[in-house]
Image 1 (tube, rainbow, N blue to C red):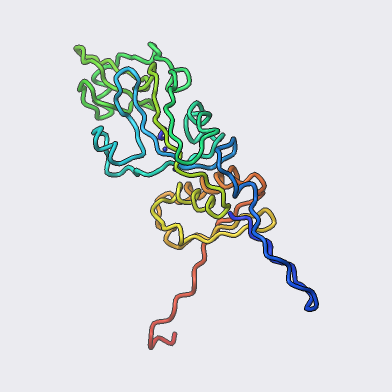
Image 2: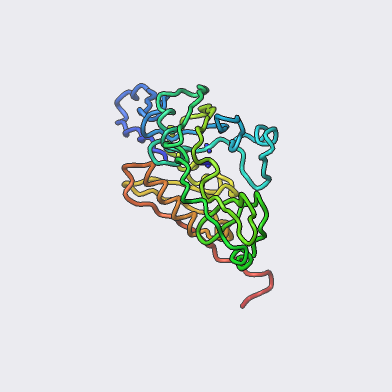
Length: 271
């Protein structure tokens, strides 16, 4: 679900002949810079808390204090506004649709029925599994334990003799979900869009360490050398390229560049 938060370079003024009076300076903004309402192609940051309608239990949030108060806080999770590119399914489609038309600082409550959320419960996904099979996968037969079995994730709901009952439905299946959403910002400036996209994929590297340029529909992102030490960095880079092409419809190519300088020789070393 939580799931959760480029710049068209300004045209240089044309050279003016010495005998002509300088043109009056004017400030112009593109339609994108004037964007004040979420549209079908907006890039926005939102905060939200998600609860199940029947019992009001919070199961996801972008806000740290809410997570702590709801006892779902995890130290490794990031609690900050979530970046959403409208129309690209970075969030539940039913929730994305409700963001359209909102303005910065607007808040609203959105109900998502099961068929548009985690789906209805499927009885066929409740299975009996022999304890011996669980033992081979190094799982203990304990009621309430969440396990990964094969390619499925499930919860042990009962221990019955030599077998256990495992529910492989999503914990949210069959439930109406309620989202309390606040629109924090709409990103209009192209360079800010690039920074947001990079931060989404590489949150541990300062945004200012990246350099961006756009020319002839080619977006170039100069990556700091520190990114080489990120585990599975190639997947993050693929994600950045894909996100840039989504956010910038006119871009035809994305280049990710890492530059390594020749190290300076040690003092006194002439070899």
